[in-house]
Image (tube, rainbow, N blue to C red; front, top):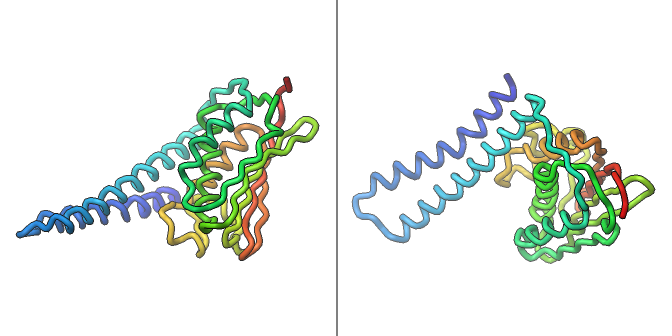
Length: 222
């Protein structure tokens, strides 16, 4: 019931904004091109936000229904190269440092689509909370039979009181409430990691940054 109530609240906000902007345009007696452009830009932004939210809600609905993942043997290095290549477009003045050498030769058993979705969640968060001019690292560390993906930003950090709650659905700390997210990304990422038998850990210090560690079992090496 709480999930439905929270989802309804999050959906209502962009829908109310879209409806208000449409009504405003309909009431204009003398259309102003610049004003119309600004209003349509707001509608477009809210529509994208609504689309992201619906996609996230569908992912969580699948998680709750016990969806079966399509596991495949995947070369980690090739998958990460593809993701990093696309993720670079998310940068807005941050210094992005992918250090992926230790992914070479590692084979994992993953669902490629869900696995990439999880990676994009952490990459998007890293760029979102790293100020321009600061560093955001994406590293791979290999142990004997495990590999750890590390996302390390130089953002504002997460307050200690918020750390136990950041993977809860719809939870947003005070430092993140100004963003467009609904507080679902980390909940989805946690589910994907657990579905892959992985372990997730976070370290954070206010005004210094946050680091997420995702550890997975290696299927084989070549």
